[in-house]
Length: 200
Image 1 (cartoon, rainbow, N blue to C red):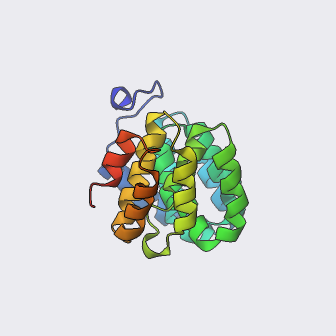
Image 2 (cartoon, rainbow, N blue to C red):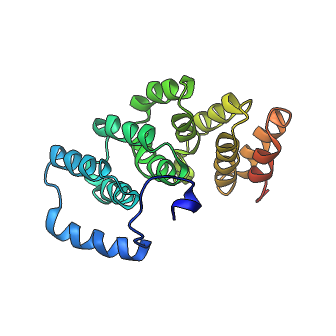
């Protein structure tokens, strides 16, 4: 597992099905009743040394949807910057940040702007892919702006994110995505273009 993810972080070697079983056991015994309790539980799991504990922290944060809110954005941001790798960041981006964006877009706009203008690669990737599960609720202005403003970057994870986000939205609004690609074809990398046009 560590070799596949190219990380030195220790693993227990617990598979995803086994982890889901553990999550169900935890949920019946320790479900949070307040936001403070939710935060303590997520942070408590996240600060443990093994990778599977980080996965459990994300799963726990996702499971208790009542507490996924702008109020907990600082916690999610810390998890993104600490995690700093695709297997952790992408889950947080799509399922936690994405949920907050859909619920509180106007509150999130200045935050996403700060992330997009910042030095942290994983926060910029988060802005690009945070609407992967938004479907018809996708804010296309936000999506296209993030893709356009990061198109010049050479990092693989940014280029892949652009293509992934555009490809996902092409399932909902192929015309809009095709129009964006036509306008920015010369700016987008080959990787981004290949990913973006898979369903077009």
